Length: 180
Length: 180
Length: 180
Image (tube, rainbow over all chains, first blue to last red; front, side):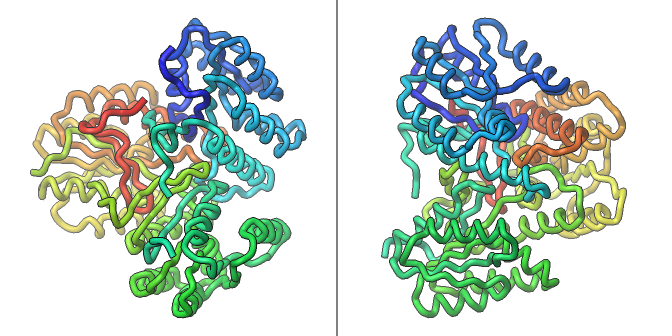
């Protein structure tokens, strides 16, 4: 297993190559990885996307689908000594909002787990806050929650990478102190 | 007072932690800072946001609310030898558009002030141009104005920082020459 | 002619200064450049934008408008030993979708050309994937296609630069190996 830190956050826009980049990190680290999917195949578009992602990943991954209990599943997988790729936090957030869970409580539980787990865990998430302010209230709330979640997870993670057009930019790493 | 340059632009998406980062810069520099808010508590959502920001900042800040005359207020505060945090340029722009002011004239006046003021001044602004092209004409005009404003202010400022998930990335600084 | 690599991709949000930055690269390299515009003056807003861009570029550029056959035009111009600025890939993509062309085929042809052409070619394109998920299916498809196109072109290009507020950030260059 190569040196993957305990926790990594991979952020990026839609179709930025963030999942492929994250999969590469895990693949280099282990052949016994778990893909923790927060998506559910709710409609055709999503089902096709999930199937395509699954075939792109290839063999050697075990896939677990868990739309809501991310933290419990994460703790279980890490205890089994399997590196895990969580794809993605923004869908998890969307599921939580739909199920009317308390986002602050869920975020706090995730951040606590990140601090405790031996890892390695790689989280993938969508940057959604750099466009025009959305018209509808729900989209605005989602964007706000996502931004706050990213700040919290980024603060807790050992390494944060932003992916654009498939190219990674390191925002935080154990070796690179944050500038002021 | 630590070494804060005369003018700093802090850009970032929604909920990227840009205001907190900017406040940290000012807080390190002085205990007598002015918070120049361009927001007005027009609706409930905005009023709640303003109140939350104010309580997060804590004591030691004097708050001035000025939706339109940013440049005049800025000159007055800097003459009084107070470091100032302008939060944020995109709301100011939105107010100017609503009041049907000439954006080019206002931008030119701001850029001129940035060149003259002793500072330190820290401007916060929202990146809004990295999503899909908005449907409605007004949103498109706003996005275009914001992009042009950011280019002008970034060219005039001593230091430009982009914040993602609370993590700063220096785009321009007195020490770091711009690559070509 | 200064050292411009064979192929450069300049990405950025709306009004980020990406075109001006790309023009600067070409201008430094040659006085006999070609501006390959993928835009058509379909409506008033676009016609005004094209006219403004044209006057900002000044003399010394030959402009070719080609909404669809980007690859053929590119090969012709490069064979004539003229450096070329393609502005922009996202409009080309939009034209292709409108004409119901096969995006995967067109992308593959472009990537193949990038690998073969002597250059220098500078591509400009819009980052559109960092806002909230768009409501309508077409916008979502466009965003997905754009993201995939950017990944492919970025992988093929010698140099990739992201422009924010007029300030370039190098994501990839012959001198700078991609971090993992």
